[in-house]
Structure formats: C-alpha cells, structure tokens
Length: 200
Image 1 (cartoon, rainbow, N blue to C red):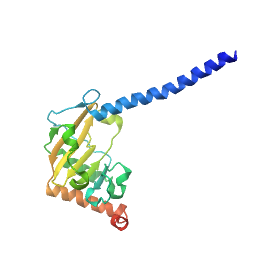
Image 2: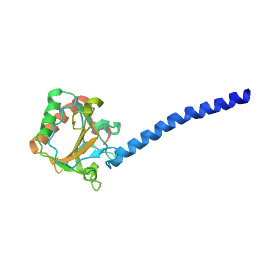
Image 3: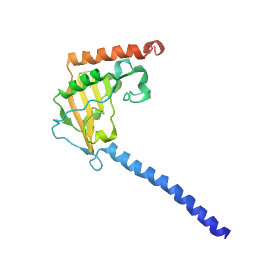
C-alpha cells in the first residue's frame, strides 16, 4: 500500500512539474518566433502602408543626446533609460504627435533595415518614442508602438495589427523636430532633477 502511495505521489509530482515546463516551452517558441519575424507566427508586410495610426493614451519619449553611459541605449519603456525619459499623457499633445505621423509618406522596409545593425544608437539616435495599447484594441487598430528619430532626421516606425508587423521609414521636418524637442524639454524640466548634475 505504501509503495503504491509512493509511486502515485511521484507521478503526481512529475505531472505537476511537466505542466509549467511545457508552458515555458510554448512561451519560448512564441517569443522566438516573434523575434525572428519570419512570417511563420507573425507576418511582416512590405506592401504600401496607407492606414491611419490611432493615438495611444501616452508616449514615452527619451532624448538620446542626454545619454552619458557606456551601455547601449534602450527603448524608453525600459528602466535603464528612465533618467532621460519623460511620459507625455496630455491627450492634445499625444494627438499632435500622432497627427505628425499620420501625415507622413512611409516606405515599408524589412526588419533588418529597421534595426540598422550597422548604426550606433548611442551616437546616431536623437529621439526615441514608445507607446502601448490594450491587447484587444491592437487586433483592430495600428498604433505607433515605436518611433525612432535619427540625428539625420530619418524616422523609423514600428506598428502592428493582429498578426501583421509593419516596419516603416520616413523623415521628419525641422518644425516637427522642434515641436518634439519643446514638448520633451518642458516635461523633462517638470519630471527630473538635472540629469547632468549626477552624471557629469
């Protein structure tokens, strides 16, 4: 009787251990597929982009020219760059940023071109914007999830809807760049102690 109980308990433990392991494997497969962007789990389209972006609730914005560390700069959604990141929640300003993007003529590009592996973001990026949206809403609308503005005024944008990922390229004008700079500087002065005072 004790042997049967022992065997039953061992089997139960193995089953319980197998479930989270199986879940981790599934999550890894999905995550790996998303990173590859190879069209098996997520489609990357190079068709002309003529859709309209929906304004998010907020934008995370960082000014890469303030970055003084040796680590490679990351998206403003990561805490690594929180000292140089602001969060713009003003709906009017968020809409203005979105309107700027909606007035662009975008060229569809590949994921590799979007990543620009030959470039150094610490030296070449000026502004980096990021946003998020409700999971259900993402199935129906395009949001500007990531906007990277390089110092040469080239603009790269990542968006998606459902299972389709889009990587887009355009440029930004001096007036549009000035608007983002003024927005950032105003909010930065409100949210941060002088970054240079403890990174100089």
